[in-house]
Length: 291
Image: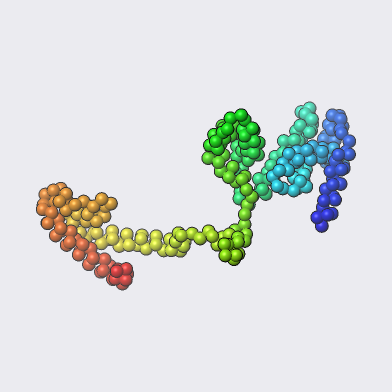
C-alpha cells in the first residue's frame, strides 16, 4: 500500500473517531456486558470506535518522540482492545478511565521498543525517567536561578527516584538520534569513509587474547611442576626473590635465613639452574622455542 493511501486511511480513521457518538454510562455498560458475556463483536466495535478519540488524544501527547502518529494511534488501539478484554462493568468505573492506562502503556511500550535500536531500561522508574526527563529539564530551565548540569541531574533523580548516573545516561541518549556505523563521513581530503572506520580498537583481537590466556595458564602449570624439584630453602628464596611483586634483597633474605647474602646468591643460582633443567626435561621443544 502506498504512503498516500496509508495517510488517506488514517485520516478517515481520525474523522470516523471524531464523528462517533459519545456513549452514555448505561450504553457503555450494556456494550461491555455484551462483549464480555456474549462475545458480541458489534458491541466491541461500537465501544472501541466511541473511544478512539481518547486513543488519538493520548497518542498526540507522544508525537515528539519522532515516531509516526499513525503507528502511535494503532498501538493505542491495541491497548484499547486489551482494556476491553479486561474491563469489569460491575465495578461501576467508566470505561474511558480504565482504558486510559492501557492505551498509555501500549503506546509507551511501543516507543521504548522503536525509539532507538539500543534497548533501554524497562523498569517502571526507567520508563518514568525516559518519558519525563525532557519535561522536568524544561521546567528546571525556566527557573529564576541558573542551575548547572549536575544540579539539574540531581534534582531530576530526586523527582523520579533514580540514581544521578541513570539521569546522565538517559540525558545523553535523548540528546541525539542513533547513527549508523555505516553512515558516510567526509574526510578533510574530500574522501568519503564509513563512520566505523574511525572506531579502530587498539586492543588485541579476541583470538589473540584467548591464545595468550591459554599460553599463560600452560606456562604456569609447567612452572608449578618444576618448582617441585627445589628444596624448601631453595623454594623460599626463589619465591621471595623472583615470584613476588616486591622482590626481597639478598641481604634481607640472608638475615631471615641466618646466612650471608653471598650464600643466598649461590643458592638462588643453583635453584634457577635446577628449574631450567626441570622445564627443559618436561617440555624441551616448547621451552626452547619460547626462548
